[in-house]
Length: 250
Image (cartoon, rainbow, N blue to C red; front, top):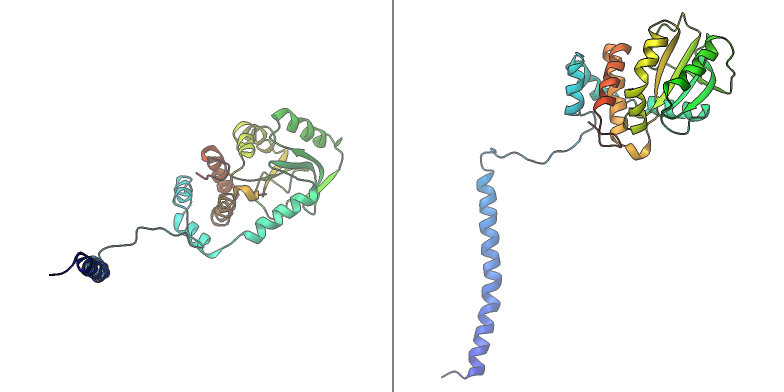
């Protein structure tokens, strides 16, 4: 007959054997379950990944709404990266004295595409823009800043006007959003549609609004490339109306 000490020893020995055996059996059952689940390839991955050149579905819906060919737009996004163009816009803005968004240069438009004028900072009321624009239209404006209109999207006839308003903006900036929702349309109505100035939009995405700010800028550039300046500003209008801003996107 085994003593209490001997029985205890036998129990410990069985545990040492059975615990790893149970772990092994569990592993085999899990493996078998996985093989069974994927045996016919019917289960697909549920995780999503963002790939370079992918089209954001919310942006694509907006593009479709303004009646731009979504196939051509998607092809443009897949084949083009406007990173260098956007960086150039930002660099030119900084050189002109733009330190935040929205920032503007209003002034005399020269034949070489250069604008000699002054900087207007922030989402100023309409009256602030009116005062400076009227100064340059009358020939009284001074020149303290200079910037090119480059090859960026614009509204108006650049071959017939003598004054330009150049905006440097971030699609995810709440102050840019305020300007576009409150002031932009009146400037266009009073000065662009009447043939007095041209309005130019250049990108100035802020680092703390990335990656959504540059994603929107890249998409907008593709809209321009595929469908021209008018559609670019239609896209811009809707994006500013609907963005959550501060880097949250649509």
